[in-house]
Length: 87
Figure 1 (cartoon, one colour):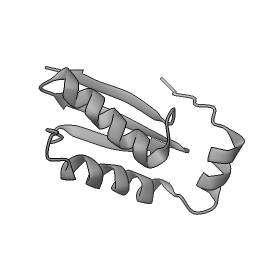
Figure 2 (cartoon, rainbow, N blue to C red):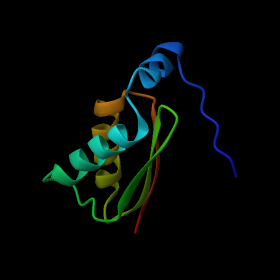
Figure 3 (cartoon, rainbow, N blue to C red):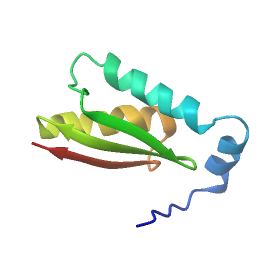
């Protein structure tokens, strides 16, 4: 399965000007693990072009929503694909 995302020209231009995948991924990972109110031990972060993909498991639905909010605060609303499951 191939995920395709279509971004705005502004976001894609920012991506091309140095907001690269490793830096974006590291920023989101750091913020997730630094959040005291979030159990992010089983969340993995990856990138596809200017998008961040969150995957993994959390114990509560609120943790999934919190992880999404943290990632969107870093990369922008609408540029995070959340595939986190609650178990």
